[in-house]
Amino acid sequence: MLDLGRLEDLPQAYRGQLESLNLVPLWPSLRSVLPPDLPTRRTQPVHWPYQALRPLLMQAGELTPIEKSERRVLALANPGHGLERMQASAAMYLGMQLLLPGEWAPSHRHTPNAIRMVVEGEGAWTTVDGEQCPMSRGDLILTPTGAWHEHGHDGARPVVWLDVLDLPLVHFLEASYHVQGQRQRVAPGHGDRGYARGGVVPTRVFGRSRKAWPMLRYPWADARAALLSLAQDRPGLEPVQVTYVNPETGGDAQAILGFYALMLRPGQTLRLPARSPATVFHQIEGESEVTVETGTFAMDNADTCCAPGFAPITLRNRSAREPAFLFVADEAPLHRKLGLYEERR
Ligand code: GTQ
Image 1 (cartoon, rainbow, N blue to C red):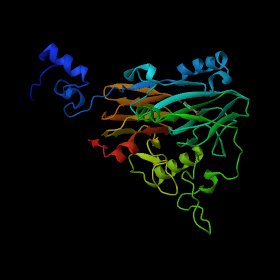
Image 2: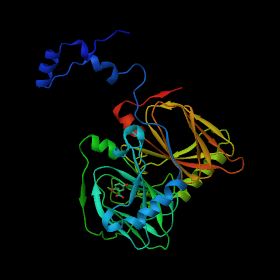
Image 3: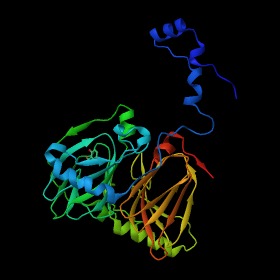
Image 4: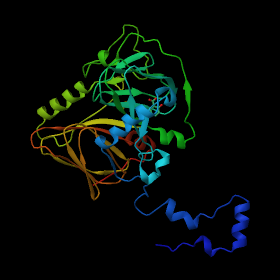
């Protein structure tokens, strides 16, 4: 490989002249911005055990009223990016949000896309562009870019969910902002009822529904049933996985991040190829083991972990009797759209 010159090799006076004209020599930095074969990744493999973070989230409920927080969230931050940046990976933000009985998180909309993966509790709801979506463990709820959303809670116990946003990317693009709104009027219609069965979609006599986001809530009961049915139908199938899609287009549910549910058969070990996008795993049911490069995380119920891109990942169901279910989020739609998507075996 060529031995490139260093900044210190240049005369001080010349460097000063460059700087005063806002000029920078490329060659001393060329290898750091274009490293050989593998990108430099700040994203580290990180595990956030739910049992450790839950008491701190509940404490936030005592320390900070909803009126003082708007959204009561602990961000799951990757130390590789610096904790203050609140990034799980280059494009993904993760947060654990707590809503207490009777609380209301006011309506707003913003440019980053968000989803909620419900972790615990019953009785809360998120209203997205007028559609009130009930929240139960494992349900996936979309709040796509620009959609009004507010959270309320009519139940008796705390409700917690995992937020996944493409905030770091949108912020990096200098395109991140929000708009405060009024309490929404709930409109009739539920995407998850209209699109309750795969293979058929609601059809109006006079043209299709023009909603860009026809389905906002993906009940866990349906995704789980789809995985069990797929596993039963194809006993030889290695990865038993479904993708959350827009039922009108068949494409990814959101434009930037991808969302999936994966089932590990009892005792199953699944080796995933190294892929360019970073990946997040959240344990919905059962117990598994996630090995990223050389480190292994023991994932219990409601645990979350992340893996950088280009890292081989091995998943293992730690139970020999019960299936394990993981919710997966990644940056694959973004990488595909940009032509950057890669898989290495
Ligand atoms: O619930 O609208 O974790 O706006 C971060 C930003 C949640 C939300 C987050 C948000 C929200």
